[in-house]
Length: 116
Ligand code: FAD
Image 1: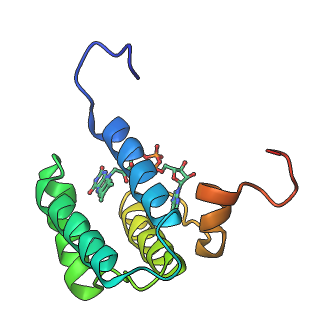
Image 2: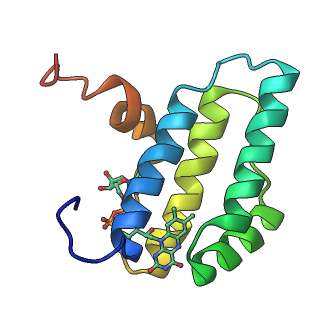
Image 3: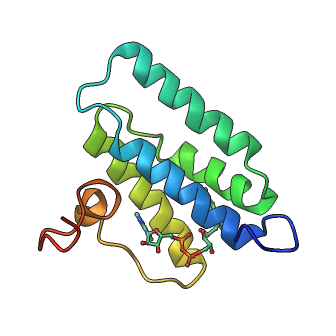
């Protein structure tokens, strides 16, 4: 938290980073221009090289080779990001997230209207 006596540790940094990544995916265009697709590819590529957790970024880079980012659309990118997060969840023994609900979590809010 902002009041923590030490610099950001891995869990805080991870949570904050996933928030940024999923939100960027959720607000990515449905029909991105070539230039937007290029920028997103570059962003994710740079992120995977510079994220300040060596173990995290090594694994993330390997996963990106197996499954390159889907920058073709909002839903494609949101689903890809969700799958990447699930790979890390699995590695850490955390529950899997249902990727059909990724936009509900990061953009639209619950369908029961509890956030309206
Ligand atoms: P987080 O995993 O940070 O999730 C935050 C919120 O996202 C959850 O509360 C949930 O609402 C939502 N969420 C959960 N899963 C998904 C999903 N699949 N799709 C969409 N939303 C979801 N930590 C390590 O210890 N080792 C690592 O190797 C490692 N690698 C990482 C790689 C990357 C690229 C990033 C960004 C983080 C990595 N982390 C790693 C950090 C780790 O993933 C968590 O962020 C950290 O452990 C804190 O977990 P948390 O339980 O607070 O929730």
